[in-house]
Image 1 (spheres, rainbow, N blue to C red):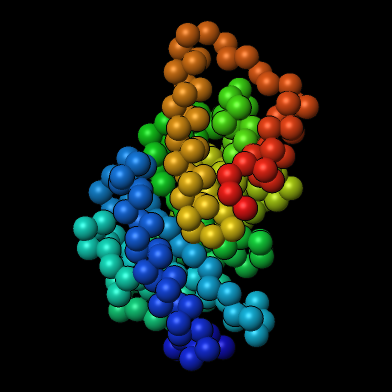
Image 2 (image 1 turned 135 degrees about the vertical axis):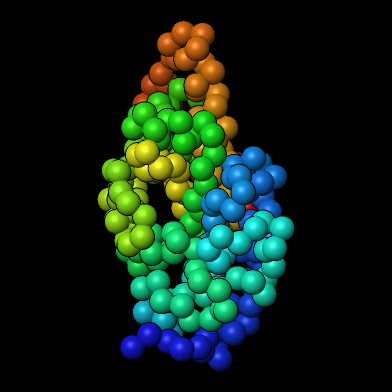
Length: 233
């Protein structure tokens, strides 16, 4: 039976996630990844009493970025049912919920219509791994997922099918745009920013000639270093 309210033991975690998700939405227009009300960020709220109690926080459908506050965020279960909020959830909620339900390691999901990544999606073409930045973050090419219509979990199924077994935290859903995942919402936003950057850079490179591929052993080495050594631990 769907929840009708946030359980008391998750109250603090849900409130913290609402603030975090609201703040992270500001990064999408800042990095020019969205226009008007398009795009969304969500974060999983884990229930340490059992994964079946996990929730997600996401923005309401059609809400202007100028109107986004922690209080405006909505809470859903992993079947996409509204648990808390007085607005309808994002139209992409079913996709986000499906990803969380089928990829337990994922803690954040982002969807944008960023120009260059969406242009690759319109062509149904993966972004080849021809930059060390791509090897670092994506561990190979950014793959293309199947065409799917918004409104149910079809997009979510395509994301899971494409990214399961892939090192990439980004997928270009054909004729739609990029979805990214991460250990939390911040990591998924970072992947969205970098996905657009490499989509733009590789596009520009192809206007000049054919980009040079990176040998697989170097991709593997770069990915391992970036994921396990780079930065502060």
